[in-house]
Length: 75
Image 1: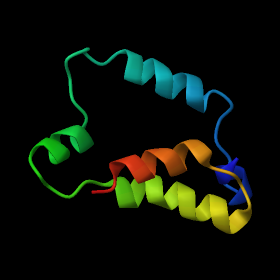
Image 2: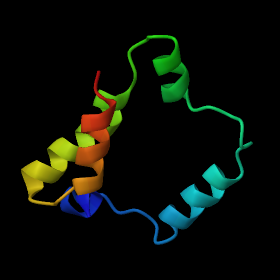
Image 3: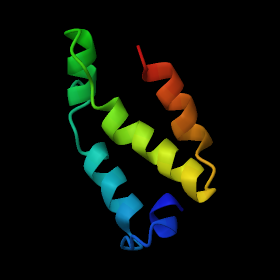
């Protein structure tokens, strides 16, 4: 919905493809954000999650899940 509000057109199968890719990762693998947090480094949470929240709020698109994730991830 946020993408549509910004006139960004994603393929209809974008979510399915992303979930399939994530599902193919080794169970014990870690994301770059997880590794950064473990090492006390700055994460990309502001670049990724905060952007979705900000654009959602600017365009009137509710982003409750991203809002909650952002609040929980900010140091």
